[in-house]
Image (cartoon, rainbow, N blue to C red; front, side, top):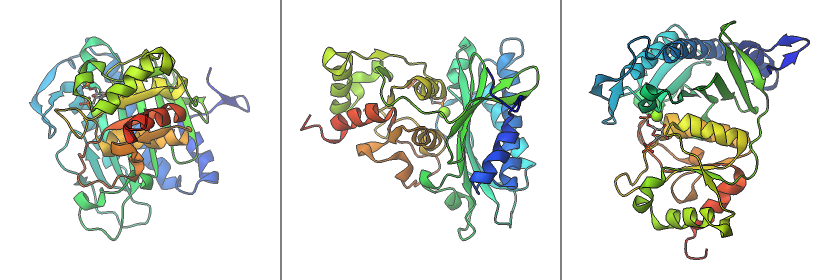
Length: 337
Ligand code: AHM
Ligand code: MG
């Protein structure tokens, strides 16, 4: 049930205003920016809900900078975000998984100027088969002393001002943090508003579920193989496996019920598949705010990685604190385990 305060539902906009009292980064400018993201995701949700009725299945016919087939809905989602953010005068730079380079939206001079990065439709290969997909976003301050969009976006995840995702699942949920806990809102299709449904989410410290594309097991480095072998057998407690193949859906399950998600390095993709800036950093921020952990290569905290390019990839191990620590015992110190 949606949470009520003084008998009233709490909308996303109201919640951000309440946050401003505790957290200075959630300024009036910030809530104006966030309203652009919520508007775009409502538009995307309406397309996702009508997939099959309107012409949004299938490929658009091009490949993106990552060499991946671009789906029609990828383009629709990307355009929706760019258009709504384009009308927010405080967004200076945007970067998207679907665009080759970060772009300056407008020259912004004041102190409350932001960079928004996003994966407009994550897991889009699932759209044609009615499986959940999502939008992931992260917000940084636009540094005044750095020249050019390419350089301005290259900030470690620890500098994120806010981050979140929208999961177009059995219902549409928005999960976000601005550094003061993790909160979930559910889109009420009748009101057209995101209403607060979970506040101050805390991930269970441990759960017996892992989420990994295990078909690639033989391509993972040996310590990951040994960890998964250990976890599934009795000595590790006999984990069960859940893998949707949409990062947002897999992560959301872990956020609520606990466990671990990993996308290790593979022989084909030694840096992993997932993108640091607009996939791993936002989820890492949310995981840590909910009491979990997120690590990259060699156990390095995801949010400490210094990016070299906006489309950098990183291996990812993320989830409940004790599950991630358990996995890192294998990954970081394979000899002693
Ligand atoms: P995308 O951003 O092109 O959709 O790719 C990212 C997706 C993630 O949602 C998911 O975790 C992963 O790719 C699945 O990859 P794989 O099919 O190799 O398991
Ligand atoms: Mg993606």
